Image 1 (cartoon, one colour):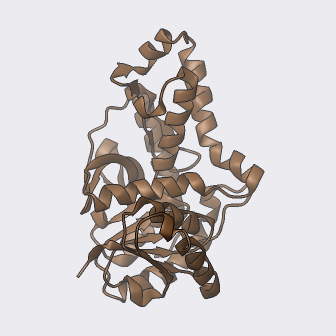
Image 2 (cartoon, helix red, strand yellow; image 1 turned 60 degrees about the vertical axis):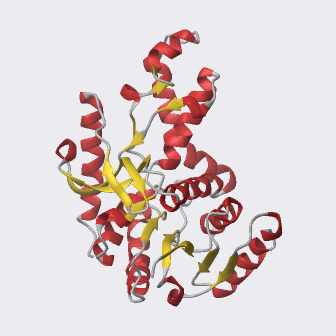
Image 3 (cartoon, one colour; image 1 turned 90 degrees about the horizontal axis):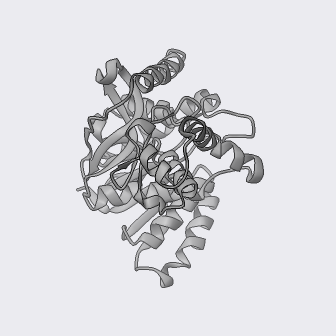
Amino acid sequence: MTNFRKAVMVGCGFVGSASVFSLMQSGLFSEIVMIDADKEKAKGEAMDISHGIPFAKHMKIYAGDYTDVKDAGIVIITAGANQKPNETRLDLVHKNVAIFKQIIPAIMEQGFDGILLVVANPVDILTYVAQKISGLPENRVIGSGTVLDTARLKHRLGEHLEVDSRSVHAFIIGEHGDSEIAAFGSANVSGIPLNDFCEMRGHYQHEKSTNEIAEAVKNSAYDIIQRKHATYFGVAMAVKRICEVIVRDEKSILPVSTMMHGEYGIDQVVLSMPCIVGKEGIETKVPFQLSENEKEQLASSAKILKDILKTIEI
């Protein structure tokens, strides 16, 4: 029986460990299992994080193996090669696809029937791979997509406008990577169109400002990696948010990696698009108004990913 109070983290590197730490603080789960190729590292991370439980809520956090996934509600996969300075997410494709060809069968052999949350990069490609190898329904294989990119966009817009970023409503869509699209056409601040709000705050060079903000968001990970060699705190919070939405059946709208089936003329490729997410995973994509330019950019993003998929054997 699937237990949505139990989560499994596959991969105990920076992202996996930071995510478990964030989930420990959230109190969402009563049991979190940590799995890594380096079993001693998994044990050490589990011990370290467990020592914070007296300051949080009662739960069990321990190192385990793939037999522990059988009854888990959510399995989160962060395992994979790390992105290095001057390396794009797409450069990681073949290394991480090979790793997924080992991980996904090991999970499914246990009779796993919960939700797979893919976080490893390139997340859109690996979500596609996980869907194909696992055989799970597409709605239950989710990529973390552009949830973090969208948070970065809201943060930047909040700074630019000197307003609480939680009042900013905007999405990054498409690839979680260099071809991502900042969908400014539908962006608003508490219902007020973005350009109108900008002018209210004394900003009038809309195209220049939005281009600069979109570029800064796209390059955020590269900037962080250049300085500290890895990104993990932001994505850990994104993982926590996605898990919250699933466990609490919030039916919140998140830009997660999902298979396209003809939307905007795009088919058989995984892209990050706003979706209603709840206890069954992705409930439905949200009809999202895009400008003609944004549609063209989305099609280009899809083509980049499709071209990569042609080089992969699944």
